[in-house]
Image (tube, rainbow, N blue to C red):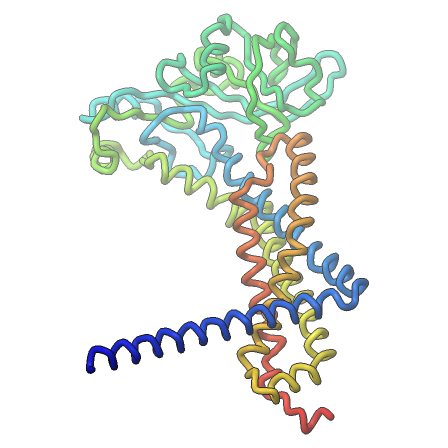
Length: 404
């Protein structure tokens, strides 16, 4: 008898839960239907709202893509090299303005347990002159040792290995058009000294100069007239199994204070932070991104607010019918989310096309990636949710008696 009673109670509880679930699903379908109907009732107003919402989303996508490309590009040269620890002058801020130190410090570093190899990387600003047009352009001259295990890019390693001795250089094929003919065998001038193009590579560091060229360190001092004892950056490869932080700490104890020691990650972080937080281009891009976000939020807020005001009588009636403020609030949020998603899809397509054109013209890695799309979509959804929450607070207090 007791067992039968427990079964009846269990069945009744299950039936109640099932009925409750059906009621929730029914209300959700009704809320979704109302949200869709509200948005599509006035087609022209919907189109205007979509365009107004899509424009700041396009700007947001483009600003984020360019900002990400800056982070990638400012460390692009270092990406060519395989190293674990770097030695730089104490005045080093970023690649183009780092200063120099005595290269004997690399010999001292090689004596530290755990350090397997050292590589001299030299950087100097100079001028490139096209001998045909006599057009002068700014040039980043990069001096390197014999490739060994430090050059990660196989094509660059092959070009360097085949580069003849003497005044032969590898020229960045992404350099400015003012460089003139930079195909292998062509001629040019670096700092007024004649050189021959021995090959090409692809870098694209227009943040620093109009173009760049790579030479052997044996020719670097002659071309740039710098003291051969001085070097810009020392790259260190550690032995297998060596602890990076422990070796760094030992190097800091052994080497004098005229150099700094950084791990690879610390160097990359410093380069990116300097450009994003200090250089005008990073600051402008960051501010533009926040402006695009705020403009999008304001437009969504205006659209949703207008929709709420126009339908305040209807929302108040729903409240009076017992649907509750939460249900009405859900309709407003659904409208905002659907509007944001509907605007995001064409905005992402348009932004991807524009970014593809930018990449082809500037060689910046600005392609619209799936990760970027997901990130911006989440931001847009959060933006629309905040706009909806701000716009429909008054719905909870809507009283039919005051509206009719």
